[in-house]
Length: 256
Image (cartoon, rainbow, N blue to C red):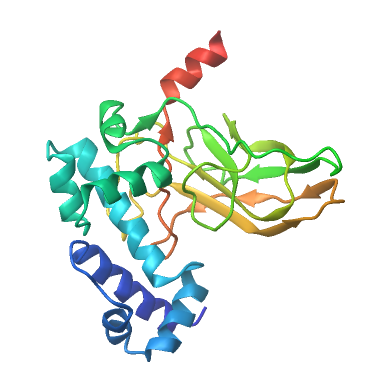
């Protein structure tokens, strides 16, 4: 990616962070990037994988997650702070993206007790597909649980189509994958930092992320292989919106 484009998109993302309660338009963002509106939308998607509007929405929910576990602000106040005029719309959007309601997210300290994959099934006339491969990480990386899942877009939000959780880098297997075009995404957080949501422009507490896609699964696909290489998240990466699994409960289940 050209350095000038990356810097321009970075400026826009910084502006988004600083104005989450404001109704930023694509025209506003294009002016910040110093590009035409149409050129800006194209290069932003090229740099991040999603549209400016969807990226802004993801940042708002990411900030809402932080406020829910680090402040005593009401859900209504948080909703207003991150740019929503309707608490109902905010709560619905939060639950569909994070996986649990705002009050439940706060109650469990920012964790989810389990991740429920999409319930879609494959018809008897279509062969079951499998996606398999290896999750790699730098030898110096300190990783907790490693989540691997399939999503319709490059944003890890909502219910994954299929998923698995690894305790360390290594082989993964996703079975019974339905036909479609999916993004294979993985993320992990350093042990003890599950509750920290740091400055997105600092790598001090950045989660490790990886992605491959889109991967097309046809009606006759049997096995597809795709490896994932974890790296520190970059400010241009869409935020991980899913609630993190509670490592303590997973450890207890494993021990049992």
